[in-house]
Length: 297
Image 1 (spheres, rainbow, N blue to C red):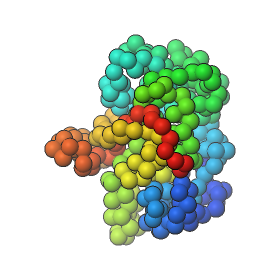
Image 2 (image 1 turned 90 degrees about the vertical axis):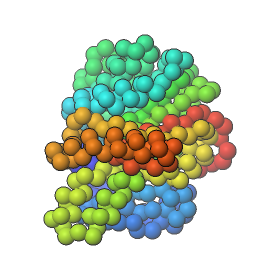
Image 3 (image 1 turned 120 degrees about the horizontal axis):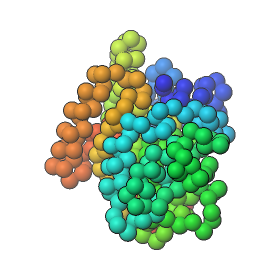
């Protein structure tokens, strides 16, 4: 299932084409387009975004009642373990945004953490793990207003929400002083290169190449992320290579799965040798700490 089908959206029903950056308002230039996927890049903050935007109502409809094995977290145990291993003993309480069925919450509580989750369109939560079902809310705003935690995690979420900067601002309100946000996202360095390669190929070959790429509403490079984090008052921003999922959520096939097994260890080696300057893995982890807002985004 591709990202358009997963969202349950049709290009014809989505909002008007964008030609200016939805974050900073600067001019955005066409980057690449093939089949139903077209992207622009901001000339100011360098944010990459889909040429067709979605709003909160469309996102809600797209994510309601669409849960399968991937939503329950099966095949992501290695990713969840990686994120949890980044936490320290003083990180006792956490919120997982985009928690799906709550597999990450279950694993966190198994490590002695107190956890809550956010999942859009959760309805009655019948698909969620029973032990954490009562701890899952439909939004950050639906949580108790006085709830403060040490860590907020977002695994493959930030690139799919209508306004990532607003989400980061809301997350900051839920963090205690010195709190940390841990984000996992597709690495634009890799997936953007795949799109550029596909743009030079005949349709039949291009479709095969693009099956290797995962890009949603937004794609982030370091410059864009650093700008957004800085604007929202986050500090100590760090980047890491992330492990790959054990599953095949996008039906990319055996060749892709074997490629991930080779590429990720190589990417970790290159990252270590370059002191995190070069990140060539399909997905990356971004960690930042709560600071003070410097200016509006």
